[in-house]
Length: 373
Image 1 (cartoon, rainbow, N blue to C red):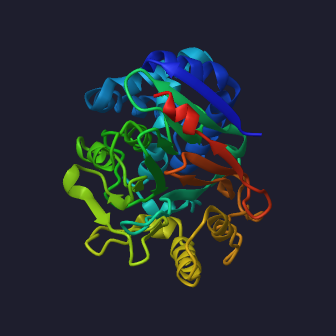
Image 2 (image 1 turned 120 degrees about the horizontal axis):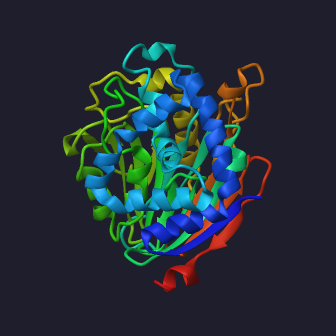
């Protein structure tokens, strides 16, 4: 059963409470990533920690509160701060370490299918944001739901690997975030604001514009895709490559108000090498399938129909609903860890821990929690 971590106060205290409540899961994350970094990047733990240290200054310049949260997590879980920092730059280690030498030597990986449904102006339909998060097998035991009341920002809820700051989530200001890994040949692992720190910053936004501005205000280290939704009826996709605000490409909803994304670049102005398409060749087929399902149904999408979409097995085992390929190396087997659909108007998060094809969603209601802030 997925653990719920409830925290409040300033950044250091929230982090400490997080670390105390999820200590066993955090240690599980650290043990798993020691293996994963060695397998994917060829780096031992001291090398990972040394590389992670180069991100301290970019994070401090971006917002020191996120370092304070990580320090608190480390204190609460009784592990070194450097270890918590290392897993918070896991994307930069896994996808960038080899990019500086030979991207083709990386094992293939599994990742996510994300979406937002944005109704037209004047509609009473809700804005729905969500995704399947596919990752290595260990994550089924380390994923947690963090429910945070902040002294200095909106309350937020995020579904995330224990020890990391944030991933998919939404906040009391009606901002919802889903995300996908992307990889280009410009991902060199150079210091900048890391992916998971940016996701955490977006959950501090009071408006969708502020969520976009979080991606613009400092150089980013990694490529990624961000789906931003807002309960007022707004949504956009942001494809990012490493660099400043000039390396962001925006995708508007289609004629049905649908935003969909996988793990390859889709913006027509993208002009680098899409390494992610090589690493995750199932991505275009997942997009083909989800677009066909959404546009082939004339009725309005609902959480129920979206979970049916997220349960699709076409192209298995690496379909929209991902299952482990038993023939692959243990660290190269991927599975759908969680499925999430957030209703930004009703302040609900419907969540499946495991495969959505076989597990019914649980609806988590946060209207009262958000109302407190």
